Amino acid sequence: VFGHFSHRSEWQLVKVDYKSIFDRRCAEEDYRPWQLHSQGEACIMGAKRIYKKRKSERKCMQGKYAGAMESEPCVCTEADFD
Image 1 (cartoon, rainbow, N blue to C red):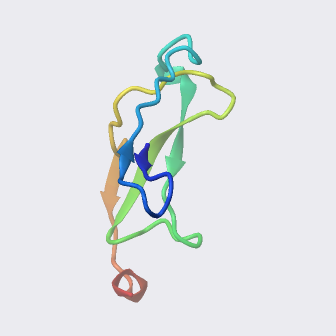
Image 2: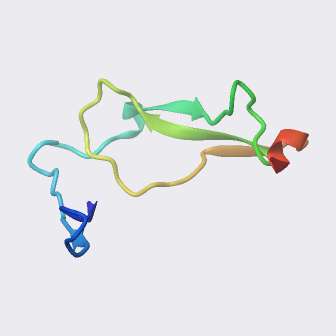
């Protein structure tokens, strides 16, 4: 966590260790596909992207972020340039 305790204090960096809360690392079955969208539109900035999202009922520690599982190009719209 990066922030400060008051408006007058210096910035502070606090490390939070969650290892005592989660007893295992997440496995493939702990995730589900999730599609990024904006106001119901799946094509954002010329791409449709599907990510892995941890299932809310799974209590496991996530590893490194892997990025999009799938990505396919699509046509940009005027909204992409707002």
